[in-house]
Image 1 (cartoon, one colour):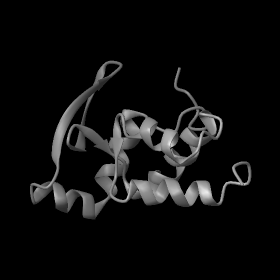
Image 2 (cartoon, one colour):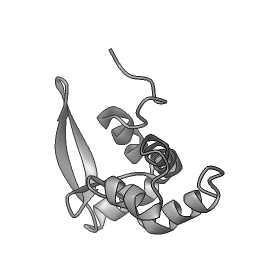
Image 3 (cartoon, rainbow, N blue to C red):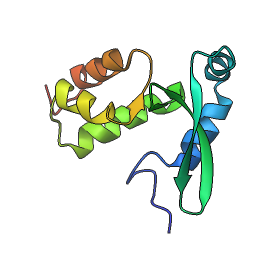
Image 4 (cartoon, rainbow, N blue to C red):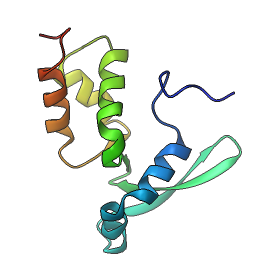
Length: 109
């Protein structure tokens, strides 16, 4: 049974699909700035674009990922939210995305 995106915003499948739609990300992969790594989910294998062994979150998913982790961790602030996300995920300017999300979070303010 697949969980709703509201329960957890990421699956290997939706990361893979979103990465393949991100032309800028694909160009950087072709230029050798990023690499592709295989991940196994269930009975399938997904080749995901990574940076320093972290899965790159495409721009269309970054806000959703930030909001989900911040809410799921019960509004722990910038440092804890960022440390949790960056254990396995990465995107350029991730720090700024998280700061801006928390700046406009009604619960945190």
